[in-house]
Image (cartoon, rainbow, N blue to C red; front, top):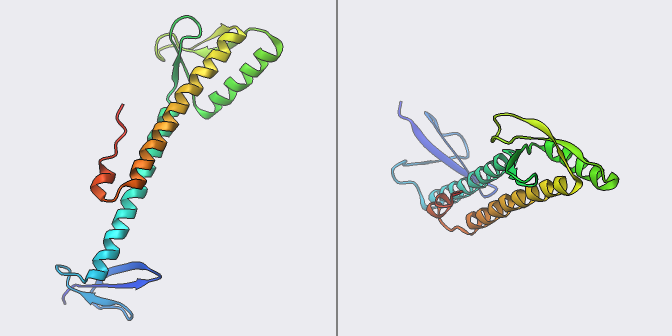
Length: 168
């Protein structure tokens, strides 16, 4: 038995397969010379799939960068702060408390790029600056992700999509 290649177009979508028998409603084609309507839909689906995968990749990189921590010099020297979603919520709460009460607040940070973590005392101004620094970094990441996604959405070829990369 010889393997057969077949397709059909349903609701503007290409449905294709292989088998030893061509199912009812499908059209057999020569795999080395598919018909133009097959190639057009196949190329369109491949283009859209490549675009979707690139946008997912950009979103994943952005998310990874957002939660990987950030540096702030609010204490007078660089300290690393954690930025997982819970950390972001905790920072907002501490900043709000510091600004409402005027009291100094203890917040976890690392003076040695994550080797050790300790709760250090921050004045209301310092902890507010930590929040601003984190927001600035997060905003820059989101802006870059948006810029890259616009490039992907404006691409007209798969090569143009693949050329979009997150360079530091």
